Image 1 (tube, rainbow, N blue to C red):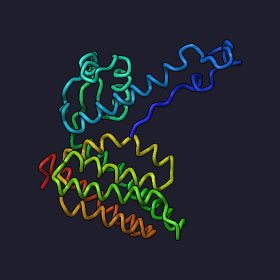
Image 2 (cartoon, rainbow, N blue to C red):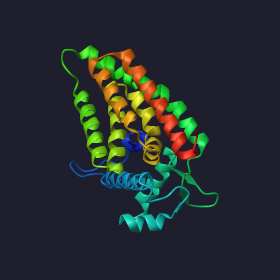
Image 3 (cartoon, rainbow, N blue to C red):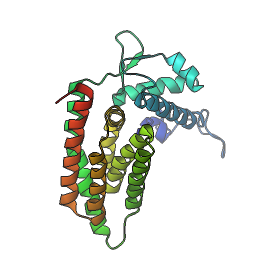
Image 4 (tube, rainbow, N blue to C red):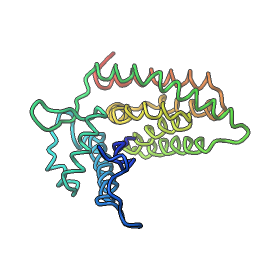
Length: 254
C-alpha cells in the first residue's frame, strides 16, 4: 500500500545541464549504475513492508525508538534501503522523527484517530459508490475486481473463524483496498494510499465485533449489485461504527 517514485531526471535519463541525456553508451550496454536503482528500490520496498508489518502487529510498540542499524541487522539488509524505508514510513504517518536523530513508532492519540476517520469517511463512501457504478456500467459482464473483493471477504471470514487476528486484519484491509481498486479512480487510489498504513494499524488495535464483519458482507452485496446509493449508505454506516468501536477500544469511550 505504499510506493516509491524516482526523479524526473532519473526517468528521462538527462541530468542537469545535459539536455541530450548524458554521455552515450555502447549499444546493449547499460549506463553506469543503471541496475542499482531498481534493485535498491526493491530492497527499500521490502524493508518498508517488513517494518510496516512489525508496527501493525505491534512487534514494534507505539512510542518505541527504531535504530537504523538495528533494523538493518534484523532485516539482514544494508542501511541504505532501511534508511529509505524509515523515511517513507515517516511520510505515511507510522513513524515520527525524533528531535535530534532517529525515529520512533508514532503513538496514536485520540485526535489522530478522529482526524483519520474524518478523512477516511468521505473517501470510503465515494469508493463504494464508484465501485458500484463501475459494476452497473459493465453489466452483464462482472468486472474482475468483484472477484478480488469477494475473495478478501471470504479470507476475513475464514480468519475470524480460525481466531487469527493478524490474518483477519490483513483481509479487512485488503477488502477496503479492493473497493478502491474496483472504483477505477487512480487519484482516489493515490489518496487512500497515504492513509493505508495508519488504517491498518488502527484495525489491528481495536476489536472487530461480529456486526462489523456482517457490514462488510452488506457492502459487498450492494457493490456487486451495482447499487450506488445503497453501497454508499452501507459504507457510511460501517465507517461510523468503526470509529465508535475504535474510540471505545482505545480510549474507553462509553
